[in-house]
Amino acid sequence: MTYRFEHTTRTVEENLRSIAHSQIEKALAELDDTEMSVQDTVHQVRKRCKKLRGLVRLVRGSFSDYKSENQKFRDTAAQLSYIRDAEAIIETHDDLIGVYGDQIDQMAFSSVRDQLAARQEKILTERDIEQKLAQLRAEMVDARDRTHQWRLSEKSFEAIEGGLAKTYKRARTAMAAAHKDPTPEKLHEWRKRVKYHWYHARLLRDIWPLMMRAHVEAADKLSDMLGDHHDLAVYRMTLLSDPESYGDSEQIEALIGLIVARQSVLAQEAFVLGARLLAERPSALVKRWRAFWRTALRQEAARENALAA
Image (tube, rainbow, N blue to C red; front, top):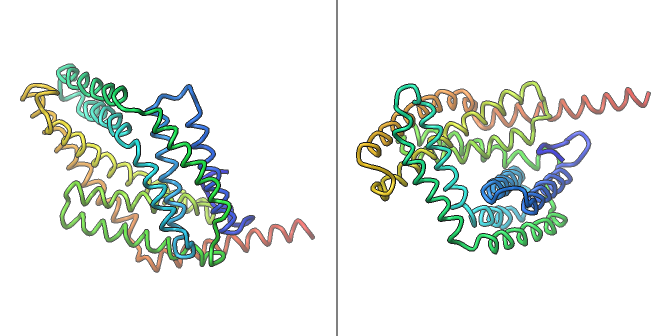
């Protein structure tokens, strides 16, 4: 099953269990895929856990097990985060050099990348990753078994409107906080809230595909901008934690300058896009999406009646 509500043919509760089961099964298949690298496996399973957290957050107001399930998926994703972080830093370095490639001597920073790759290799060989992957798999199997018992106290749109409103409101609040004090920490917090709203828009995109597609794409773009900003902050911290290990002072100083410049551009673009994506008050967005939901249900009912006639 794809990551979306089939709200015209399934109840919200049926969608909840089915989508969760599908994501967990995909995570297990990725853990069992011997052709995938450790980095790719970890990255994929962490994404599954984040999508599962987005799913349970949508129904949080009617799901009594929300807090425990959200925490379990968070803890599962965090177990091997250092592997993904090491890979992300290399990707961030490559992207940064690519952005400014026509303004700098790219080869001047090749030794820095070599050191980042050596750091990643050291992380992959020093820790008992296979045992941790086995533990992660066991936790996903346990989660799959739990999904069969998941129940909601509300039906139809009432089951999701509380979670939808809360997540969207938090994204707006985090944007205002970041605008007032645009630190990497505040922008990262904003990114997390936008990411969950993006998951919710994806889950509900069938309520009006034409309209929701643009909203999903905008939320995805904003999340990526803020994610790149955070990755640059992590990269900067890594370089400054032990600069002598990565290059000479001129190399590090030049990279820090590029990081700061790129972060400034990303922040400016994010605030412009965020002002548009998050322009509505939470109550207005929920009201509008509720209308889309109900119209889609009436449309499906009319179609079924026409077929039966």
